[in-house]
Length: 345
Image 1: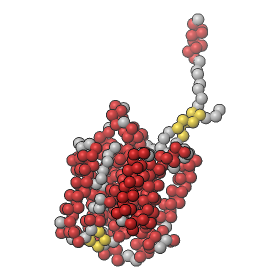
Image 2: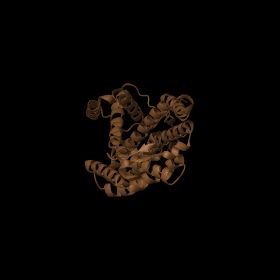
Image 3: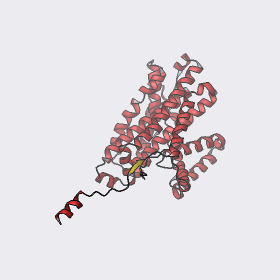
Image 4: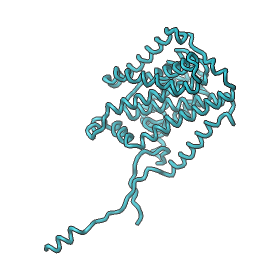
C-alpha cells in the first residue's frame, strides 16, 4: 500500500497545453492599414491639396476627441459634457506661447498640453464627489466659466479672439508639413496610446472597473486613482486635438474654442459607433464627418436627425454600429481580450 501511495504521489496528470492569444488575422490586417493611414496622414503635403489637408486634419481631431471621451465614458464610467474646456484652454495656451511669447508654434502645441493637465487636476478635485448627471452638469459649468473668463481676459484680446500671425513666417508647404506630422502624432498618441493602455494590466483594471467598480475595488483596483489618471490623460489628449485644430484654422475666439458642439460631436461619434470600443470611434467619426459635409447645410433639421439617431442607438443598440457588426462577425480590429487556445501536440 505504501508503494502504491508513493507511485500515486509521483504521477503527474498533464492536461492539454494552452497559450494566450491576443492577435487575430483581422487585427494584423488592421495594424497594417493603421500604419498605412499614419504614413498617409504624415505625407499629405506630397499628395493632397490644402483643402483636403484641412478636412483630414479635422477628421483626425474628431477621432482624437471622441476617443478621449470614449475612454472616460466607456471605461472609467465618467460622463462629461464639458470637454470643450480642455479644447479651449489648450488652444488658447498654444496661441499665447506662439503669438505672444515668440515660441515656435509647432513646439508651442506640445508645451500647451501643460494647460489642460493643470486644469484637469483641480476640476476633478471639485467634481469627483458628484455622480451621474451632477458630474456631467459640473463639467459643463467648468467649460462655461472658462469661456466667460477668456471672453473678459484682455491679455488674449478678450472676446475679439486672436490670430496666429506668426504662422505667416512659414510657407504654405512648411505649414502643411508641420500640421500633417502633428495630426499623425495625435492619432498615434490618442488611438494608439489607448490601445496600448487597454492591452496592458491597467487595461484589465479599466475593463473590470467598467463592468463593476465595486467588484474591481474588492480585487485590489484603485478605482478612484485610475479614474483620476484617465481624466487627466483624456484632458491632455482632448487639448492636443484642440491645439492642432485651431492651429490649422489660424484664428481662435472664445465661442469657437469653448463651443459645446465639441462635446456633442464626441458623444454622437461614440454612441453611434460603439461605446467602449476603438473600432466604434473610427466608424462613428467617419459617419459624422461625411454626414456633416453632405447634410450640414440643412442646419437645425440636420442636428435633430443626428440627435434622434444618437437616442435611437442609446435605447436599442447600446453597442452602436460596431456592436451590431460583432453580432454578425467576430473580427476585431483592435482586440484587447485574451483567448486561451489549445496547442496541438
